[in-house]
Length: 217
Image (cartoon, rainbow, N blue to C red; front, top):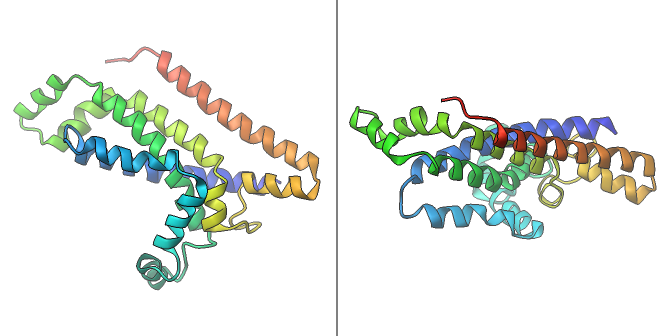
């Protein structure tokens, strides 16, 4: 019972870090660009797409018969499918939109004249974002990471399709909860449900705290 919870935390932390780095990279490349809206629309689609659709896309792109899947297996000797790596990828995909939207909103809210001033002092566009915008937007970015973490902890459908439901390997808390319900283990199901709810509520409380906390210039 506690094994799936520990695995969930491991997968969610890795997925959140990867999604956070990816989101910041996308923002750095598209900040103040006309294509930003279209890029965000495409990358935020996983937030509203059915898990089966996301799972299908991931299996098509990363399965053993795909070019990426074959290349990954040739280099690492492992596969994305039915492995812990697949669970991380699935959680990363579901967490990414929340992190991207929160971080984008926070960085876009930074006064553009500050970035322009940094550019006139010799900073590159990426450098101005990193040294000026990112510190000022840190609370919004942190909020996005917390929301992404909570979403990664609760993923079910995409993880099931890409990583499977293998006890001790890819069975996260959500999958273990489903198995416990089917097997009539009400005590285990209740414990897992309460634990996942606690993680989600704690994350939201921290997000609210960040929103109320005065920003120190």
